[in-house]
Image 1 (cartoon, helix red, strand yellow):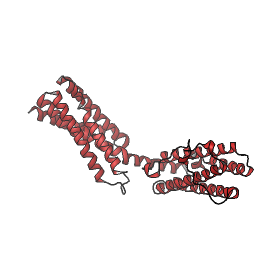
Image 2: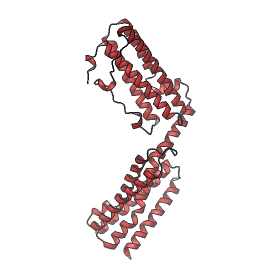
Image 3: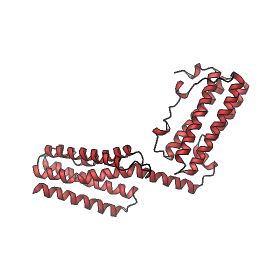
Image 4: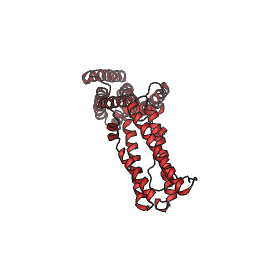
Amino acid sequence: MRRFEDLDEREVLALAIALEEEDGRIYSEYAHALEETYPASAKLFTEMAEEENQHRRWLIDLYRQKFGDHIPLIRRQDVRGFIRHDPIWMVRPLGLEKVRAQAESMEQETGRFYRSILARTTDASIRKLLGDLIAAEDKHASLAVRLRETGISADTRVEEAQAERRAFVLQYVQPGLTGLIDGSVSTLAPIFAAAFATHDTWATFLVGMAASVGAGISMGIAEAMADDGLISGRGHPWIRGAITGVMTALGGLGHTLPYLIPDFWTATGVAAVVVLIELWTIAWIRARYMDTPFMRATVEVVAGGLIVFAVGILIGSA
């Protein structure tokens, strides 16, 4: 890996061409990925990609005047100090904030790069072009400013924010909530049945661990296989499945861990308190993200949970 200080003018210009080409392609990918859900922002990224391509053409013209037609291949990853940007396929599902933050980082980095070149070159034509490029990069270094400049209205930004929230709920909140409900509620019966049947905290703990981990694996696989996310927009199936599986296991482990306490009644009392906390948390998430009135969510979740809780105690005490 080369140090920036060791590059000559020919290599620096070649690197600048590669940076502008890469940035333009990234913005084009952003535009393509966002056009269906966020058309206004997609249009912005298309325009930015065109600007980057224009910058690349300016740099190529200057390079050919100075050094001829052969441009050495020098890339961002070949020079120490540049930020590594994740490929587009690694940052899906794309959210507006994630995209805007990465784009701003790219613009700021490119601006610093051009200022570094400007500080070390005395060639008048290179300095002139660098000044134009720095001004262009500064013009859209802040995407918030660019959004206003390109005429995206406040109503459009609200609509895009709502679409982003819907995507977040579909891809993360909903599978997590499904897992939490299943883990918290469905494991109540076997855990408390084992507790009241044996009055053995260690045996109850083992039953709870088996029920929680087993349910997590089962729910995770089922969620991943149920929907590939292409039509529903619910995101990558295995990411969604992992979220569901982890939250299912956590939901069961919450009232399993108290049975590490040796005293049966103390452990059961703590587990019962944990169950109430879990059910309240589920109700809050439903009210916060699923637009369910809090009191209605509380009654539905708590009532269902208490029924399963009572069934477990009755079966264990039979």
